[in-house]
Image (cartoon, rainbow, N blue to C red; front, side):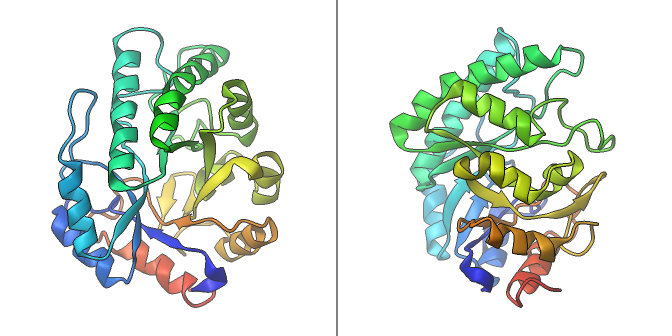
Length: 280
């Protein structure tokens, strides 16, 4: 495996496939660790209830798999929500997701600002995000799970826009400093980073010390793409990650439903490239 990075598979693109078949496919690719998405129909988790985490862990272990990271789908929850029912539901949801991660043996939960209201002032959205993250950190600390804030696509990606805030590295750094908790870090998403005009050297200059996962994915302004099908310089990104001294895991989670009719394709593309030195 190139450069000794551990590669995390994911069930993200398998949302039209039963979980058992998904896990069998991931195991057949010789993956051992996952960035697990607790999405329907694979696993139910909401702000009011959660499926059987112990049974899920047994399913993973039976195939030689483990969940290293949990990336909850945002649904209509939002870390930028103002005080009220949506905020409380969001807090309850992510607290359950933190407990799910701990039950699975995962030590990180990835979350972002998707679902923000585009009509609210930027500073207000950032304030509300910092407030919610500050309230979630004690739950994370209690069970030894780190929260990772990831960049989201913004207005420069009109067909895939997720939020007007918390995409640029500078804004992420600002919220990290405001919350000031060792239980809050960041996850680098290479496509979102690129769309916002950031780059890997600049990202690590600002956020290197708190980057605890890299989501390595190709893409463009219209969303995420399988390796070699976007416009990003993936080979250069690998070189820059190495130069930056990153030695953590590379998540191959690919957001969106573009590949639901061939869910294993993005993973196979990425694995073929990474296992041959980073080139397709």
